[in-house]
Amino acid sequence: MVCRAYALLVLFLFAETLFAQKGDPQMQYQLSFPQAEAHYVAVELHLDQQDTTETTLVLPVWTPGYYMILDNPAHIIDFEVQASEGVAIAWKKTSKNKWTITHPKNTELEVTYRVYANRTSVAESNVKDSRAFLANTDIFMFPEGRKEAPILVSFQLPEAWENIATGLEKVNQNTFYAVSADVLYDSPFYLGNQKMIAFQQLGKDFSLTIATPKGLNEQQFVGDLRKIILRTTYLMQHIPFEEYAFIMMEPGGGGLEHANSQAVFTYGSFDFKTDADYKAFLNFITHEYFHLYNVKALRPIELGPFDYSKENYTTMLWVAEGFTVYYEYLIMRDAGLISEAELLKYLSSHFKAIENKEGKEHMSLERSSYDVWNHFLNTDAITDATTISYYHKGPMLGLLLDLAIRHESANEKSLDDVMREMYTTYYREQQRGYTEEEFWDTVAQMAGKPLTELRHYVETTETPDYEKYLSYGALSLDLSLNDDPETERAERAYELQRKAPENKLQEEIRKALFRYRL
Image (cartoon, rainbow, N blue to C red; front, side):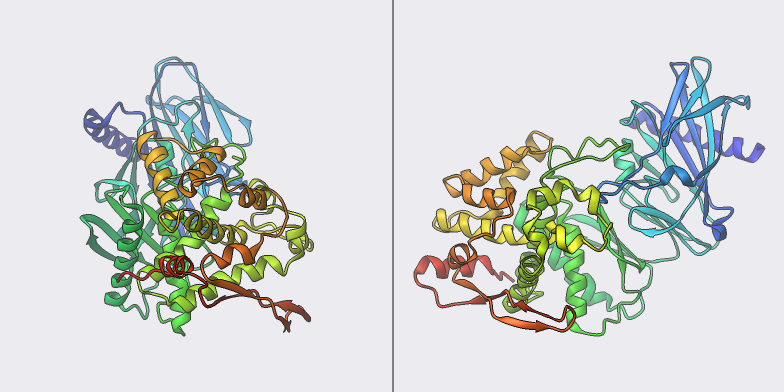
């Protein structure tokens, strides 16, 4: 107890100096790992003087970008509260994710608890004797009603651990600053002995963390990341950060975007078996990188400020996620990392995934966004028969919208202009999310007219007139039937194909759509 009190005192005195420059002190966290082999992280929280007699601490039950309610509170144990003088303070649970502390007015609080962290996902923390990934939403609490308070996080690392990777502002080797709980929750940590690579691009600092670097061709991989960064920046004409962290972990599934970082699982090695495997991984990294613009900076208005205690519903994930799939391919093609034929192949896979499934008859694209909380990672026997994914139909509508805008504007405008205009207006100028109507208004502005038919396809289960819209870019769909050995039935190919342009506009649109600038 003496060591803990002394450590918190040092942290508090340091925080006073720091916050004298950055803002009023509110919370100082210190994390340690005395039982890392048992998957525990020990948490100590110093709360500054409370001007009330009751303080409620809230632990999130979901992570932005991961649309699923999680049982985070179940992994909190040994919760205790003391006044700064060491006097025990009464508390009680008042909901599944809230701890209410009763105390004298103007009391400084010392809160301690442990977190069992042994889940494997990009939204849940995982601690082992060799390293730790902290998703943060299942580790850190915030005082209810004070989510905007500044936070200091300090680590006592095991002797064998040397590195900390995060997108948070670094104060010193083991201490980091977040201007609010939202920023903290958007900045995961990876702690251990991972390979760390630093580089600069366009005047910004980048860090690359790789937990399993076997087979890594550092020069090639960093060079390809540079191309992705360049082409994404060229597309959006702005960089919304000063530093960015690529956090690449052990084998697993999926990745999660953040405002100035991404945390992704890998195949466990950079010794890719095929060129296609490597390109698929680059697509994945590009997807998460473009998310820093689309869904983090430019976002549906329902996605921030967040309520971390319940679902946050929006009908616009088909734009936030689906368009990001579409643009990962365009950026990869733009960077010279995939060919036009590969771009068509990737896009074709989404047509096939939607049009050969019964779910297209029962779920609209708009509803797939809203109902994601029911279906995200929750699949059962009727999932394919009753649902669709915005990850598949979203990029399809992105392509059709892009073609329609180019056609209606004589190739003077495109979906790129929609994304840039919305990014400038709602993120940079108004500093808020956009509404569904504002999205469609911007589309109409670029096209020169409302694209009512395409909006109808988003809101209903009616099959789009693919032939009409694809013809704008001299494209067509191969609808021939092929036997599928997995399903033991015939499925249509739905392969995008180039066809001879019928006029100069079609030719110009296709060239512009499948651009290659390097």
